[in-house]
Structure formats: C-alpha cells, structure tokens
Length: 279
Image (cartoon, rainbow, N blue to C red; front, top):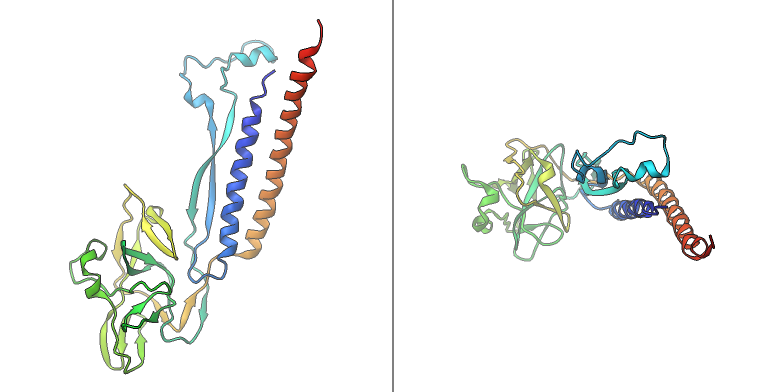
C-alpha cells in the first residue's frame, strides 16, 4: 500500500500557508498609501510530465491496486506555489488638502531616486526635507522628467540634477499635468512613467518597485499624467474580501492537516500492526 499521497497533502498545506502569509501582508497594509495587494498563484505539478511518453502505460485490466503500479507514479499530483502577482487596480482617492500630497489617477508611477538607482512608487505623500528637496516618506528624492531624448531609468547619474528643490519662500502648487510651481516660478514637471509590462515589476519594500531580471518592463514617459494635488491614493485592499479569503484558506489548511494525520495513522498501523501480523 502506497502512502505517497501524504506528500500531495503536505504540498497543499504549504500552499495554503503561503496564501495566508500573502493575505496577512495585504491586511497589514490596508492603510498604506498607494499599496497594491498581492495574490498567491498556484498550479498543479504532475509527475507524469517528467515521464517519457513511452514509459507511461494505461492499464488494460480492471481497476485494482496492481493496475496503478504501471503508472510509475504518474498518478501523483502536487500543488505548485508558482508565486505571487500584484493587482494594480486603482485605489480610491482620499482628499487630504495637503499641498505636498499628490495622487495619480489612472496608470502610472512616480520616479524616485534611491541609493540603488531610480525606482517607482504610487505613494504621493511627499514632504520637504532639510535641504529643500521634495522627498518621499522614506526620504527618497522625487524626480523631475528626464531631459528630452534621455531615458530617466538609465540615467542614474542625473538623479541629483532631476531633484525637485524649493526655497520655501512661496507655496508649492502641482498641476494635474505634474508641473511644479513655487509661487509663480515653474520648477519643472514631475516624472510619471507607465509600465507596459507590470509583470516585470517587483516590490522591493518601502512602497517602491524595482525590476525583475531578464524582463522588460516597457517603461515609457506619461506625457500628460492625471495628478490630483491635495489627494492621496488609498490601498486597493478590500478588508472584507481579504478576511473571507483568509477564513477559506484556513479551512483548506485544516483539511490538509487532517489528511496528513490520516496518512500518518495508516503508516503507524502498517508498521506496528500489519507488520506484526502472523501469516
């Protein structure tokens, strides 16, 4: 009697554990500005896919224990946790009245400078640091558009030249098109870019997005962005849906634990009872 099914149940338990971790992270960031929720993805891993076609045999006899031996393990399937993907649906816009709060309405990301190069963010809760620079909540400079014909993401050396600097002598105004004014003086235009392939983006912490290796994010400048000064984009996490998904994942996890326990009991009987039976 084969007890290999315990590995199928175990893979299901691991998958549900990963799903609960993802949901828990979403719930923890329900109030994080511009946060985009993640969703766990699963697939079915079939051992048959590793077998040569001529090795796999279809039993020609009535179904029995012996008939399954000819499958050479091809009847086994496991849960494959293929990873997570980010849902980039628009979050609601919340009015704050703050002159340095800016929300992107529609697709797009702000470019910000970090010690590791230019990164992207949707969080527009900006502030002015001690050097008069417009920065993110974490202190990363918010960048202006790159010079005509230049690729902002490729010009890390120009980060300093693209930083928004103000004197503090006049109020800051940011138009819907991203133009930054200090009083009547135009400082420049905020760099807002779009990603044609959002699957190539990856979260790197602090509400920032980097880029996956060997994948083209298809970044392009948004010439006429739709920005709203005095607003912030809220998280797109629906707390009710997340709690419902967590309850479902917990129940599935408990079901796989029962299956594992059943296989363990069968194994115990095979070793300690059936193995001692005298023929």
